[in-house]
Structures are given as structure tokens and as C-alpha cells.
Image (cartoon, rainbow, N blue to C red; front, side, top):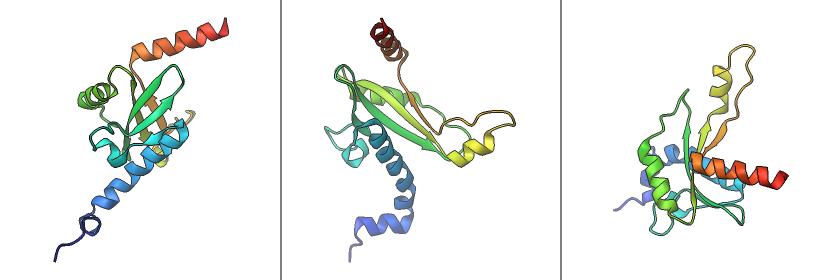
Length: 138
């Protein structure tokens, strides 16, 4: 008898390991007004974790990463992956989530606790966004 995949994943702990990253992707999509990608971007034609984030002038493809530790190592391969998948018609972004309880534990006396959700974009994209904001003020 073959065990169904969802049961096998539950038995070996993979389902539990994937629960929080999938929740992070869903919350990121909801917060930014986008949609999660089927299979977390593993399917051909559905790359990245979150799509449909942006404005009529800029469209982001977002890769989501999270940690329950005090730090996260940003891998160059993540940045290359999301940049490649974004192609020429989208902008790459990296959504990073820190566990809120860990942030509070790491906050020293007199400091303000940082937000748990961060978005990283290439400097060129950030510069264009700043320029657009400055032009809209004029």
C-alpha cells in the first residue's frame, strides 16, 4: 500500500516545517495586495512566492524568507533567483520575516523593537521609487 504524500509529509515533519513559511507567504500577499504563487513558485510559469504586488507603474515579484532565530543569512543565490524570475517586466523583492518574540528578546533597554516584516529591493529600484515620490510632491 502506498501512503498518500500529505500523510507522509505529516509523518516525517515536512508539513510542520512548511506551515510557517506558507503562512508568511500568504500574509505577505494579503498585506501587499498580491497573490501567492501555486507551489511557492516551484511550478513552471509560476515563479517567486508572491506576485501582483505593485502599482500601474511598477510590478514586483517577491521571494519570502523567514527565521525564528536572531539573524538570517541572505544568500546571493536567492537574490539571483528572484532577479532572474522577475525578468525585465517585474522588479525583484525579498520579504523577510523575523519572529516577533525573538525581536522583543533581542531589544535592549531603551531601544524600540523593530517591525517583524521587512522588504528588501535593489538600490536602483529604491532610488527610482524615491525619485517618483519626490516628483509627486512637486
